[in-house]
Length: 295
Image (cartoon, rainbow, N blue to C red; front, side):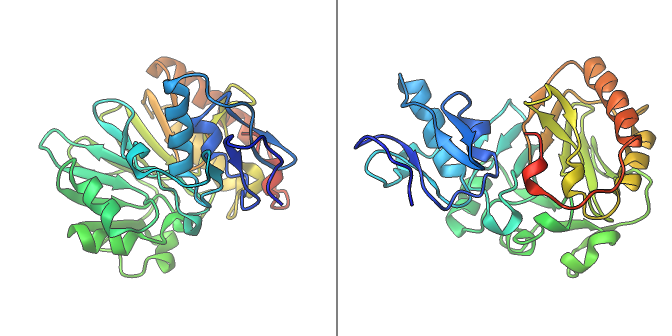
């Protein structure tokens, strides 16, 4: 059943999977209760209404509903600029567990897509408006669902690591081993086994870290975190990946597939990453439990 609500208010319907996407985009307006998102209060001004519309257009199950229940295409803010280089795609897909996807603009006017939103030709047109998309970068198998369709639509190269190649066997570029690889000017692919065997981070300009599901910003902890309760491959390998990277990765923006984004000074991020590596080293395998993720 849908939640009880005064007539005309925003609401979250029963299809919600508690993926956290809406809470990222409308903090203070959408919260969590009984294992799902709920609207905490109606918007007080235009800015808050925009946040709720963003949450509604990003929600992978279309569970966030405005007054009257119908989404207004004119209120769709995506792709949404996070700064002058990175845009959030929105329109998260249920086929990638509601993962966030991003557009990375390059100095030559081209664009790279990191993971993918739900597939739609009309969305592809909106993404291309930022510039020619040359590469679709998959962080791991869980986010591979629409990679080939977007790459073919853009005439772009599709990238994945060999460890997850069975999820995208027709990829155009296959990353191998654990050594970082430069895949474009200022863009580095860093193999990061742990969440899956073939997980990869993509680093751009020593400023942006697209971390897939390897680590994220937890609002509950106010710090970097790993989702050890949904580490499919090996928490030990994830700890080893963090230990390898902790002394060398430099970035200001953390841009994960799941969990919150965060922008901090690079030195602060580096300190937090070292501490995360130390904490993860002490973790042990545990049963998969989606409800245990500390968003």
